[in-house]
Every structure is written in C-alpha cells, then in structure tokens.
Image (tube, rainbow, N blue to C red; front, side, top):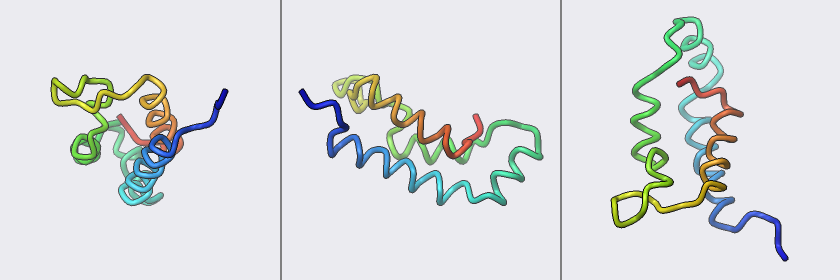
Length: 85
C-alpha cells in the first residue's frame, strides 16, 4: 500500500505554492495584514482562475472533481503562505 502523494497532488501543491509566493511576497502580506481587512479580492480572483475554488465540485458541474485530500493539500499551502481570507 502506497501512502505518499501522487504526482498530480505534488504538482497541485507546487502550483499553489508558486501562486502564493508570487502573489504574497512578505511586503505585500505585511501591508494586507496592516490594512486590517483580512481579505483581498484580487488574490481570490487569481485563486479562482487557477480552479482552486471548485476543487470539490464535480467535473460535470464545471469543477475539478478532486478529493478532500486534494483540498486539504491546497489549504495547507495557503496556510503556509498566510493567505488572508
């Protein structure tokens, strides 16, 4: 039995990690938190374009049809990057 991540899951993590590092350099992250809003629509628009907002939605309804584990991997990376929202 294999308990590691699949190549697709590793690619998903890396894609999200790359997005977060490009969109949330430390100075921008600091400015977002100092502003006190706790949300940035532009960040979530970008995440939606990557398909992150529809990971669990079935493919026949326009989503990615992925698993809860896949969603957890994305949430883990977004948490590592301290993405507000």
